[in-house]
Every structure is written in structure tokens, then in C-alpha cells.
Image (cartoon, rainbow, N blue to C red):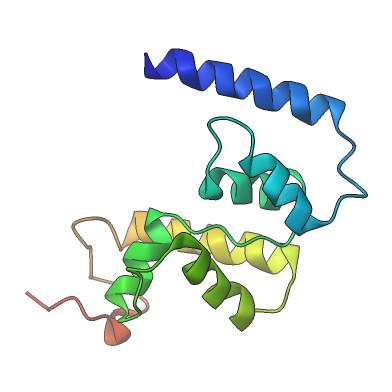
Length: 132
């Protein structure tokens, strides 16, 4: 059942995307519109805003929560609160957000898996994961 629902959500989003001129819509308003489309939550909305529409909206995903949790930050907060932490700490720059999030994903895949691979980790000295 999930894949049928997901494909229906993608069709709905695609129809909206093709029929909407997003250039003159403020990012905050655009985010609310996207969030009101069935099947789209905050992470997907922000991914669309950042990567497809080139808007300053920082993506919070499981990689972000995992890495920054292991670095000692409180990530057991709402999506919006964690996103606000990043967005208030970084200059509002699409390329910066894109690159920063991409580096988070890359780091998570190389080192900060569910079972961490600490050898060679560039932030190991800052990490709160006990050394085995």
C-alpha cells in the first residue's frame, strides 16, 4: 500500500510543481504551500526547496541528527527547532546549505553510520561516542 500512496503523492506534487511559478513566492510561504501538499513533510519540503528550487532552507535528516548528537548537541528537539539552530548559525546562502548538507551526508556514510567507523574520522576528537 505504501508505494501506491507514495506514487499518488508524487503525482500530486508534480502537477503542482509544473503548474506553479515559484519565482515570486517568498520561501517561507512556498514552504507552507509545499507542506500542505499531501504526503510531504518538513524534510521533503526542505529538500525540494534547497535542491530543486534553490532556496535557503536547511535540511534536517537522520544523518544530521546522528552526527550532531554524537558531537554533543541536543538533537532530541523538534525538526523546526533544530533547523532554526542551523539557519541562525549559518549565513543564508543556498550554495553553503547545499554543500554543508552534502558534507553531512558524506560524513555519515563514511564514518558516522549507525555503527560508527571511527578510524580516520576527521571529527573524532570532538565525538562523544566512547572509544572501544
